[in-house]
Amino acid sequence: ESLPKPRRGGGRRGGGGEVARAKLEANVFHYTAAMAACRAAGQPGAARELFAELKARGLEANEFTYSTMMSLAKDGAEARKLLEEMHAAGRPPDVVTYSAAVAACDRSHQWELALELLREMEANGVTPNQYSYASAIRAASRGGQWKLGLALLNELKERTGQSPGVVCYSAAVTACAEAGRAAEALGLLEAMRAEGCRPNEITYNAAITACERGYMADRAVGLLDEMWRRDRVRPSVVSFNSAIAACARAGKWRRAVGLLRRCSEPPYNLKPDIITYNSAISACERGIVYEGREAEEGALSGGGGGGDFS
Image (cartoon, rainbow, N blue to C red):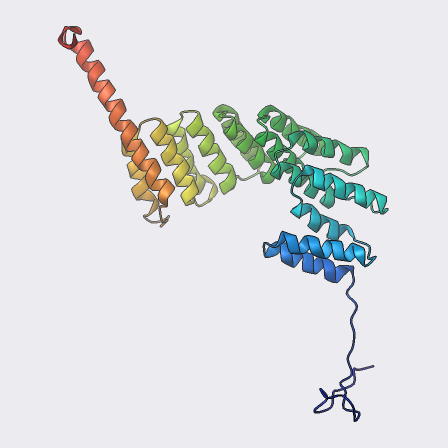
């Protein structure tokens, strides 16, 4: 049936002029949608209040509700508690929910718990996917466990017999970058290309950072060129900042200043930020020091000894 139409002046009571109202009871889907909206708006507290209200009303949360709450978990312990609630409610967590829990461990730098949840998934008959592994690799990276990150990458490759994908490779390259393992990061870049997996901006930025920390300025600048020329990935300001920082660390100030100019020119047309300028200034400062040392060493070696400086 269609809803009855309100009469004119129906806001008044009495005289048969009342408006007929249709009441709609909020269900779990409404609550979950509202919680997701709160998350998107950056209001985690409001989402938690809705979750508490849902349970107080005796409504049963579903997998989507729990996945939303997982994405708001402050740490792995809160995510673990939500998983336990799901088991108690007779709703075994699926791969999406587990992956969100592992991601919570990543955010809170709890690599041990991330690995534990990854193994728990398998024990419960849930096969981890590339996103589960990517979060675990990132968690390992934050904990300084870059070797574990590479082991997880290889584990996924052996499990599926396929390329782990750009998400996992990017996480592994980032792990190597955080540890200053430039050779390993570059090796992963070549490995993914050999598997037909095209690097994205995150992958390249991590590889450039690895070169910076490995004092490989020339290779960092080379990667900046390869991004667009080889893989059609447009460098961002972050990409240029990392390459300029690599030049700064090596004292190559002329190259750093050249990159500063180049980033704002076609085809990039980027707007340098404060980090860009600070990195270029740092390159100039270090370049002056390095050139001064070289000049002094040249004078000492070619000036008949150090008697003039006694």
